[in-house]
Amino acid sequence: MSFQCSNADFHVRSVHDNELFAVRRQALCSSEVFRDMFTCCGESEETLDLHETADSLAALLILLHHPPQPPTKIKRDNYNLIPKVWNDPKTVIPLPLLPRLFELADKYALPPDSVTEVLGEHLLAHASEEPLTVYVIAHSQGLHRIASQASQFLQPMANYSLHEVKAIPIEAYHRFVQLQDTRVKAMRKYSLSEDIFPHGYGICASHSRETTQLWHSKRMSLAVKVETLTDVAGEMEIVVYQEPVQSCAVCRKACIAAVEMLRYKCRKIPRTVDKLNA
Image (cartoon, rainbow, N blue to C red; front, side, top):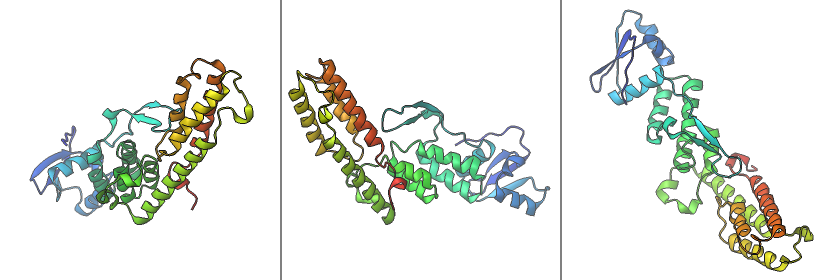
């Protein structure tokens, strides 16, 4: 990271790399640690030495002079299950940088509302692609909301290596297993119980047998391979584009209604650990 400051009136030096940074004293005062330092040293000092690398110090000074803004939301889609929010990648802090930024924010007591909470939003922006890493970082920082939100994107626990799951506290691991088991059982139950012509409603006089068999065959094959991230409604929606459903208005209407009912029911299934019953 590189840091530049206009209208500087103070200097901070990296003792580790002997690199001097021109800064604004007032910007440093948003840190409780720096305020205490200035109280002890008085106004006469012009340079402050810190035992940080130049890279870490530059990152800290950027946080102080230019507090991060939340990622820019570029799309919200309430129809699909995962993810519901997309962020403009150009506005998201890269995931590898975030642990160090959290560490600096904590070490120098930066304002939680303008720094730590915003860093949490950047962390959450990575949850759909790196859910386990995001969870571990969030948990270590006490960001329980972020950790819980990340849990909805986790793959089945069996998909992770021993090295990866070692970073998860045992209690949290148990909750993940409970969440995923609850989701799989509920999705399997809903997929097997949702009929295309429930109680004969909307039945097609011409294709009821073929359409019912097609729907039943699809849900039986789906039920045996349901996982925690499976989009059950999306999988069953394939039936809409198969014959005779595709060419029959009555069958198509019934299929769409059944798919939408499945989608509604699946949205009610807990997606995050905080929604599980204790």
